[in-house]
Image (cartoon, rainbow, N blue to C red):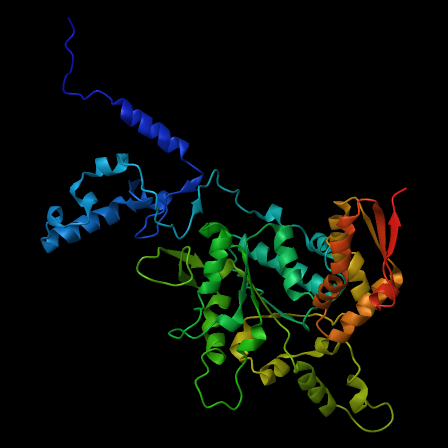
Length: 468
């Protein structure tokens, strides 16, 4: 007769049912420690407390150690019914109706994303060809960006050779008037390459120790865009917009905490350094986990409108004008629509950018201001043109939307007067499409709507055709 081991406790059916219920409640998100804010993948299994609060084992141990050292008797405290229970009893308790809100949710990684390789980066002509489908004009800018991006990723994936040749970074400085497509160009580029992209605003950056975002916050945004994958983030793209707003302030008696000092602190990021950034937060504190990110292979693109830079360029060019037959007239540059293409580092230094900052942005890309013909093309040619978006919206109501060529020309001319580039197109269309989008769904017999120029000039209404 076999001897049975009576020392082992039989499995309780309640435990099995509890595990089943826990599996049922798995919604695809990781548990996050309420104290240290670390997810379950980093801190290990969590202890579920009443009220939907989760604690990792290290934070739970620290809490009990601090209570034990203070000599407190938790059983004598009133109003704290949970302190006299075992942890096993707490885990089996049903959470009360009021749950403690969690500040963040981290989705569980089902499978790791494949590592980016050089074969995944298309050639420059393919990059430009894909950009042509979304960005109208700016041929020189698209070509320069395509070559710079391709060379950057060749450098990022290049292993150390025996000949000792080291390829340096090719960060990009984009200069163009407002609404010329700087941000849109970078967004399209990152979507086509399928790499992490972080867009930061230079106006919120301040010197360390002052109210505002620290310089490392731009890297923290990139890490969040890469789903906290450090390896993938280290080959991403950071676009710092409004870079002209951190120019050196002139004739100021106060400390310039958001100007020249920000340029100086950005030097280490642009050139390549190792920084400690918080994970899941923009601010450093003792409760936030930190990650080490190397910015050596991160492509930095800085863009800005640089207002009044045209006057600085014209002033420099006028100094070189001479007298006599065949001389360059002083007013010959006043009507030049591509005046920004003549920019030099001397002009940018006169604007307020320090030479050390400009030296770390070797590729300068200038974008032209949009003309009336280019605005008409922006309306109808790109894959996600504004006109196509409205056509798709009305097609869901089985209504065909048509814009006459004269109407498109009037919209482009009106946008040109506002001086805000392509951004003015949507503002104008929203104004005139409001009544159409409101009235058309009322009558199911409407088959098509034609937007005419008299309607835009408020001399009539759109041409409505009923279904046959």
